Length: 117
Length: 115
Image 1 (cartoon, rainbow over the protein chains, first blue to last red):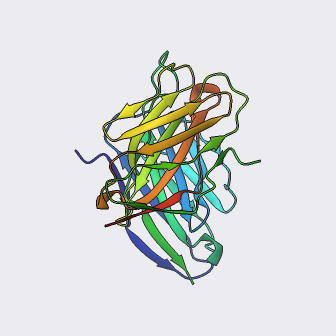
Image 2: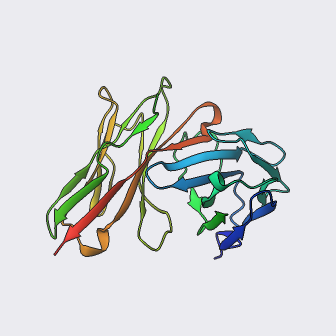
Image 3: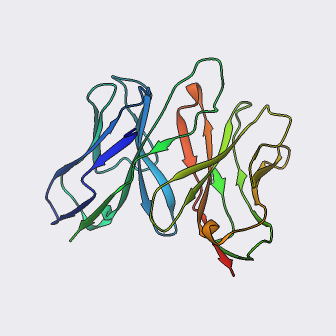
């Protein structure tokens, strides 16, 4: 069971460079999420996708773009990296179960540690 | 305004003792879900326990229980019989909104279990 797979695990970028963080899940989940984790700030939602073909902004979307390529994959792109984007990035997914309320936990990938110099 | 507030940046507990980690939340929705996650030093996020806003009983999962006080908007995590392996960051989270797609986390509490 792979669950949620993120690549790469580590990345160092120079200011102004671009890159795409990849995320794939094999649990047939409808919803996918990107969070960033910074010391003292918990996990902050960047973007989420409730279903294939839809994306919505979270708390901190500036400087990022996302693509929900298909049901399995949800990528996060940094077009012009900045030192403020140094962080640990987590992708997560959850099923969307009608009629059962908000009881679906998020399943997380192992994170990508990004450093922007 | 913070949706999820965790006011204890760090906590210490003696091994085998119980500990309560605080969480308060803010929402105008009637239906919502509350979650606790554990993040050990290895970095992965582990789901611990869930409480629904309409659940009448407090949730329990093994040594974890959730003290849910709806009127106070609090959802505190209680860990009984602490073990050294419980040393980790603990995050409270809330799922709310249309379709319950938005999930918001608190800033976390670092728990250290002392032998």
